[in-house]
Image (cartoon, rainbow, N blue to C red; front, side):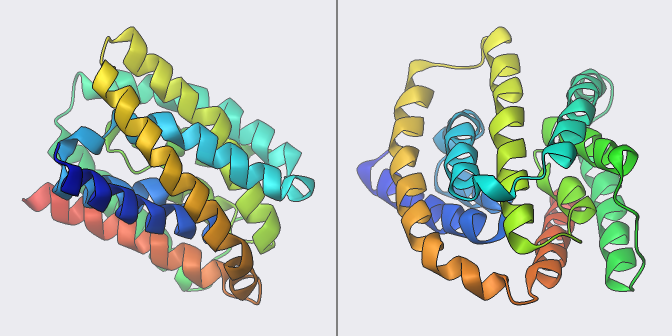
Length: 238
């Protein structure tokens, strides 16, 4: 990786981390495809390794708003989702999964946009956590399922809970990569540079959060989730 590519990657990820700080998810959803265009050295390991720090910082900032019940059930659902996702990768080609989940996610977004409501309870939150683990492991887009389930809460609760969920869930993926011997020294170096993006994004997003708190959370979640669905569908066709 050249110095210019490294600078470009840090700048791009800074923007993604800022969005994460404002909304509560989206850094990985936007960062993975954009950074892959700059250099494949950025993905997936460096982003995954930096994610727990980012989630922890953003969750700590609004720690009083964390929904402990939703967080607990989301993590309970996450573990079998990651396990099933890892098994699925050995039996199904990635393009088919992109098409399947892109279609299902787009349908879920359309249902939400039409005014359909899903009652948020331990079962639906656990299902959202499971789908997040499954999709994150298989297609690299894990945030939208949990985000759609949590989209009926206030912006501070949404942001803090989603970021806490990332802080707890991402180390599971990192551990799986370590067990599979997929982490090398260069990944650690790149991840260290991405910490700068997290710190800057943390600072920039602090004053910008209030704009989302005035009734814009649900539309923002739908827009970001819809973008994730479109990315999966496009990726399945190329």
